[in-house]
Image 1: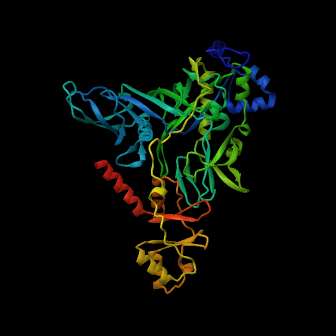
Image 2: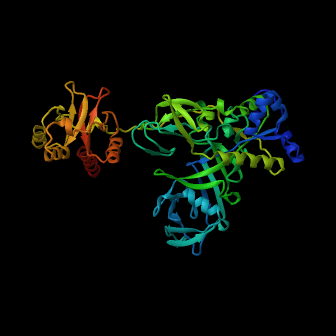
Image 3: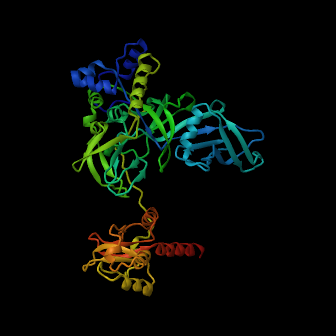
Length: 510
């Protein structure tokens, strides 16, 4: 595979010969950035053969193929659990795939597939339980035993998506705490969480994908692995390339392969990945010399539950790594979901392997694609919206209205929520039957005294399931539906959602 770039400085074969002789010049990405800044990219490109990279972070699209071997009598497994974590069994009789985010059926999200993989790599015993579909050649119906990594025929880490080229950072504009795959996001832009290692990140050092592709030998989980293609959601146009990788679990270390649980989100696997970047031409050297100050990502507002979250700010990894960023004139703490010290260690370890002659470079059989159409999932069946289920005839009141009069309205119309509006219909607050009962007991007279002014609202075009989750989160039974000017259009309640569910069930049984 010929490189895409400019005039060749050195070939893979020449670099590997130098590695075998012990005179290859290798620098970590951090060292190369500093060297290029001091002496210039031209000199650095002439003198350095290989730049090593590293990243260590939560990589949910990870997992392992495992072959147990056959018991006596043999079993054709159709359901399987490892430490009560379900493993995918749509494979041959005793082959399974355990995914990093699969959750334990007894411990929930506190223990998952990522933890199972770490336990195996740590040498621990793992409980295997499986149910069989008995046949003439596989008569056993059930098996329960323990396994260790050494006893397995194969245990191969195959990760569909690792090592994003860069990763959007996250913040939260709402007034409540959000629990996301980017960690805990504090209210009102209280913090920023980010992932990736910036100038150490593999694909940030070869932005044009001139040296990385199918067959590239890499550091993976403490052992040697290979890139087997582009990762899922590979989006080079947006600077968000990804890698699909594989490696032998029996070579790996629990130090560089760690099961984890993201608080109130779910289990994952922290994976260490390091890719050597051969400086085959000046174009590659220029990208390898890119510092954190010139590697940018966006801070997105995760308070907006949409695939197109608003961009709060464009930010460099230098700013993120500094520990704080500025948002709307305020200093906000920034924290890494990834481990930067581990990323440094991975790059340094890979450097030592190469310098000792234990690791040579491989020329990719095919480079990663630089153009790939990246499309979202379009829902082709109609999904009910709030406007489809909301009650349009809303009984409302003004803040100066008498409490007793509004209580009579609730009784007369059989409603439980009364939006409080201005003369032009704009929402000011809300009262419920409970608020009114309490107000009467405390001898309060106007709605102004008892209404809730911070109202949780819905928009008419929102998906019903999103609004149902909001009702659950705030432990309320209804909310006004408003337009962009906060004028009340209707109200949606748990009763409205219950009617929708009943209608769906009736439709399914017809």
